Image (cartoon, rainbow, N blue to C red; front, top):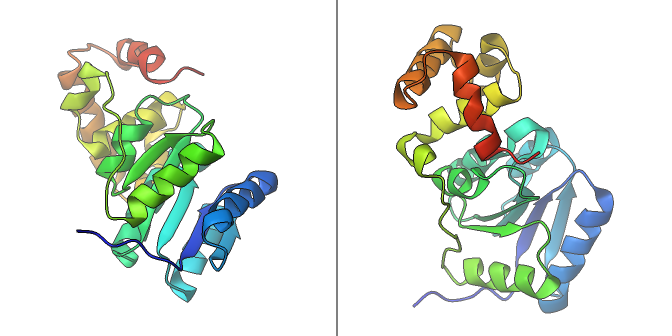
Length: 202
């Protein structure tokens, strides 16, 4: 049976300094000896990952135009024992499933109460996962990379911009776009973007 840690190193990735403090305080209520490392950007968080080990990371999955998903992958690759708890304001309905596919262990709403956040933290530290199934049937046919390309396209990014974010060639991005057209049975990218409203609520 999983055992729960009594002392933790916590990485927080959140651009809002007030929310950084609030999240840290919530965790410290139950783990007063926790070492909390707040960061405001993906670049800052990436640097911290090279400097120390973490037991838990809490981050907004759609930070910096959805680059948070790749940060999840970076965390679990560089520090496999670090549990990642993601949250979102609910604007991206793909966030829970994408977070899980990139390696997160749990997902909660950005509007969760302190008790809900702490319950999620304890769940992950005890070795369990915390996800609710999404209801986007059309999106389940996509790979995690295809979902991410779709989200970047929905934000108006060009092939060149997407290739830079994903460290892939522009030709590979074009291939992903063709796959998206086929899987959605769309004749054009304009038609493909009709799915945007089903995925992004704002």
